[in-house]
Length: 530
Image (cartoon, rainbow, N blue to C red):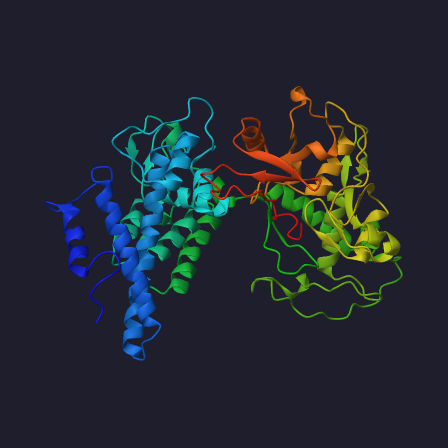
């Protein structure tokens, strides 16, 4: 029987728990931080031993018991993660002095003295950026933790005074150990997508706006659904139905519930990209008009969409219904891969009409001018021998097969960038104090994105950083330039991030509180093989 852990026995663990509840009230970490650290260490060691013990059990009953225990721990971890995100935001932890971060990586905090904060611009823009660096998680995940904490744990106004969470009914369920916090958090996320941004910090009252037909908030109805303890799939379906019904009803819908725009969907097939387009009624009429003309073989747009004359009206062969279409979408919206000799489907003709609109822009005379794409083609030296089969990747990370590349080269402005075996550009161009557009494109062709590992800022938001500053004798040459987003560019100028050149390529050394190893690294987000 398990009776002890490496650090303390079970009796000692129980004593720690009792010591942290003096007179029935939990002791705050800053009142006795060492006691909290002992408990966390003992608890971690205890469950590590439990996991090791389970690996050798032959009793299915014990396996099921520990599976239930693990699930309960996951629920507690979910609550603790959002509580921690709330505390990080409430204490403005992103404003700590960089020396404090580095010290926290190596030794425990000393609450006896006040925390040192930045006297000027902080190292991180916001709590989410700090959480992403501190926990080594993607920024969208850290940002979602902070947003969920405001919806389910608590908020603050500009003066730092506490405010209740935005979704009070769901917040009650989230804190109740009898309910699954992950289901509550999922329901909160669905509602948050249809609510305006939280403005409580700016002093503007912010409460749920999406309402049910009976006048109560959809958030209250969602809490009632979860109190019935449905399965995760059922709760997702029921809450989604509540939200969609309220958003579709003119009497209850809000502007935030519409969420118009063009949204990128996850890449599921490397040969194509998927987008979700949601437009208002006026724009919908424009699209419907373009689609109708593209589907009419007697119009100029319809002939262009078919690449045929009005007399070439051969019937199209039927196509299978794609699996990505929702159930309520009619079969006419099917998709056929490009095949010679087949008439385009209605969906393909609609896409052709849309791309004609996207590919042009109005001029001063009222006519529409065709937009010529700017294509950066990445070719290795050996690829020059087989240009017809060359592998190409756009500046936005889209891989182009040879056929697509040849088609796009016919109408694009071409910027060539030839690499040697080490990934260095063979042509460095001239040196200027200000980076000329052509050299900027060459820098982006080499590095693809921001130099900082994990940063996913798109190419259009990047600035060109002088590794050795111009005022210290640095030149505007390829071996002294690197792309960075605004935030990381500022950090590099302040010396918080170091950029070093190894074999002609720029590498980044992050601060010790982010990377204790201080190892030069390249950003693999845009080019995993580089």
